[in-house]
Structure formats: structure tokens, C-alpha cells
Figure (tube, rainbow, N blue to C red):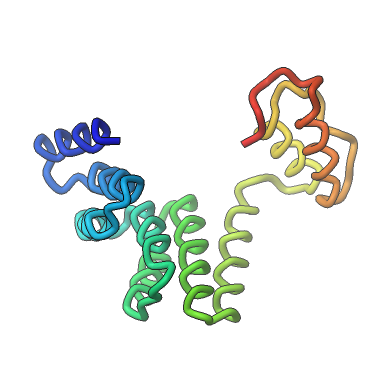
Amino acid sequence: MEEARESFCAALRVHPNHPEALHNIGSTELSLGNIEAARESCNAAILADPGFAPPYSALSNLLMEAPDPAWLGLLQTALKRADALPDKVLLAFALGQSLERAGDMGNAFSAFDLGSALQHSTLGASPQKQVEDLCKVSRPCCGAPPAIGPLSDWATCRSRSSSSACPGPAPR
């Protein structure tokens, strides 16, 4: 982890205030247990590029024990301004987690619902297609997905993908 941090710091020497490098330093600091340094790096990443979503998610995880009303407002603003769908999904889930930790369950569920709906919109139109896509991601070597209709049959795909007959990598 020390080497990773040094690599990201070297990137900052070439490109000061690079949001991805700052975020990666923050994530590395968090892995090393340096909470305050992680917070500072993630805040710097947000200042460098308020539209870059990953540091919001990282900070949301850092603030698990101490919800901050100002942080919730910042997350809501970032979500409203986000252009890319993956960023909107990430921000919606980060907002949901933060609201949940703050005890605002009604709004947390709304944020989770938004994140789920946005994520759902990226999968496919039919439930059959969604499960097929999930099966491909989970374990592509397992061949054709099961002949199913409702999404509740995802367990069929999961059980198939975790079987010993499938030599590929473990499901993500």
C-alpha cells in the first residue's frame, strides 16, 4: 500500500490536483488506517473535480459514525449535477447510505430506490435479459442462462454459477 501511495503522489507531482490520483491516495490512506489523511485527500479530489463521483462514495464510508448535515447537502447537490449514469448510480447509493446512518430512513429508501432504478435502466428491457446479463457477469463459462421468467429465478443462475462444474473464476 505504501508503494501505491507513492505512485499516486508521483502522479500528483506531474499533474497537481488530479482528482483520480487524489481519490486513490484517499483510498490508500483509508486502507492504511489513516482516516484523517483519507478524508483530506477525498475532499481535495472533490474540490479538484466536483463532478467526479468516487470520492463522494469514499467519504460517505468515512462518515459512517458521524453523519454530517453539510455532507448530505453536498451529496444531494453532486447527484443533481451528475451527468454520467454510473456517477448518478454511485452517488445515489452513497446518499442512501449517508441518510440511513443519519436515521432518515424514508429518504434513504428513496435514494436507494433511485440508485436501483438508474442501475436497472442500464441492464436491459426484459427480466429474462437482465438475468442473462447477470449470469454472464457472474460466471460467463456456465453456458446459456436458465430458461426463466421472473427475476426471483436469479438464485437458479447463482446456484449454477457456484457449482464445481464451472471451472471459471468465482462470482464477483
